[in-house]
Image (tube, rainbow, N blue to C red; front, side, top):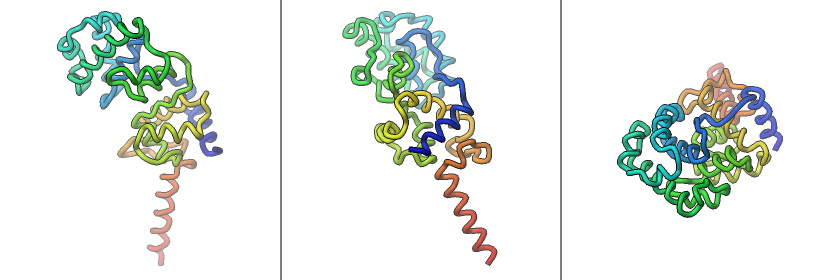
Length: 220
């Protein structure tokens, strides 16, 4: 799809050096940080995780942890009861079933408590360099606005994007959309005049067309 190729090039020029915003140093830490990021900002997660990872430095430490203690470290991330339970349980599965290692396939990762396709895609892409399409809220919103996908279901948006985005571009394409969503194309007040993608954006073109129509009516 020509439009997708143009958008990829524009995003590369705007965000040449892009990476996951979550800070981690071990494979399981990315898995846990991504679970914490659900309905929470990456900035908040990065504030919380240093103390959490110092207290529980290994998969085994998390697997042996009391859920209530994990809760104390992650309260400010929201939904902390569920997240703490999932973190302890997924680390127990990593220890008992996967030998302490984070699986390298989406199919195995989604078997872990609290791990959906968004988290699984991020892990296989960032940790293992495999083709990935990370469809978080920013990616879904911008893909719809740009006219690259339709709908709000993450799995369906992922399927649509995989059809038009080359495999080797998928992960960084999503990272760039996330950065663009935060800096320019916000949910409520997108800065369309500052957007490098506006000429490719279906929503921007639609708004401009509506304004032009209204202006012509006003002139009559």
